[in-house]
Image 1 (cartoon, rainbow, N blue to C red):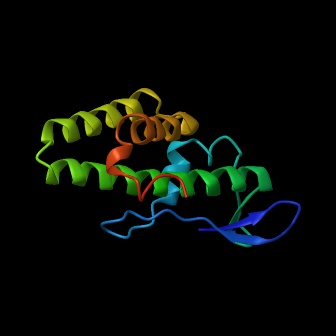
Image 2: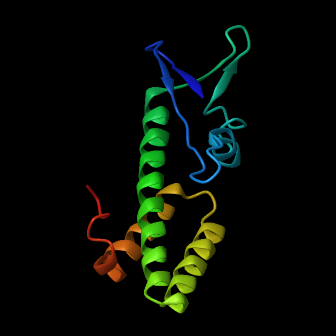
Length: 133
């Protein structure tokens, strides 16, 4: 999705892709966060482009980077647990993360913190190559 940064006038891309289908779901993410309804992102009908301020763009760009990194680590962890026949542990992690997502549906910082806690505090022995770069 192309975004114009208000004040600067620069055009930036912001995207998030489903790893399996390669579908870009940035509109879903921003829409579910209410960013199209609360004025965070506005649409310029004349130029057919969304606009936002630099701080908002930076927040979402960082969130997407964190999301992608956290997801890769969690996927690696779950795969390692399944490979080691620790299916109960893998299911527990998956369930915990889905419960966190449901209970903190609009707190994007909390999602990142929860995933980092799972990765760093409990399961880092599986993820030495995947922890924060």
